[in-house]
Length: 291
Image (cartoon, rainbow, N blue to C red; front, side):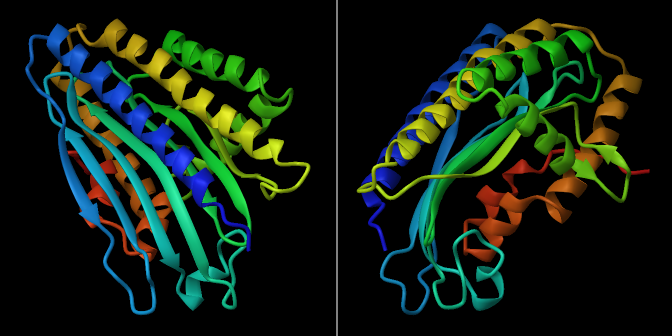
């Protein structure tokens, strides 16, 4: 099997630098709102499993502030073997070849003001007998604004168009299909992009440029998020809201929690591979109403 370790290291370094830039920008927004909130970082190590020489771990970043009611930005790099029951569900893995590495950044922000959209973003690089990138970002406003939705999609369309003429249409459609709650018959939000299995050739092959191209696109997705989402936060964070709008936000958060607990692949992957439970479930909102 190809040794992807140097490539995993490069991806991990990028994810960590993206985390640092995002957290700094979010803390700057808190300063603008008169808050001194900042991220608290908690390292964690994946529990050792019999027969696994390496397990890895990560760092959970969490902030609760005046603008960001709860925002988590996690980076993890884990190694190991999938369980026989889970291995067959993962690209390139099987009962006979259960080994994997995974590195990625995952972000979920729940906002104090219901006019400010919640958001999710993650990008990742995984290896089994194959190697690929995946990720995306989607906007989840309890009080949608057409302007915000249009600006969010326009930013990611421009990024996608720079890397593949069909990327935006494919990845937007994938997000619309994926971020859907079947039992509610509603979408989780107003969409975005979602991609997976952007496969990379072996480094020694003539097609090794596929890794570089997919890595460049994945970096561009992170940079686009860093540009567009803070703009939307600043646009809406000073708007007044009433009790009815706050209740609408809290009820909408219930839909978000249902999706993440029932359908989200990242939640399942983290729990099935011995990840940090608190970091995995940081996506859940701090306050929710069902009625």
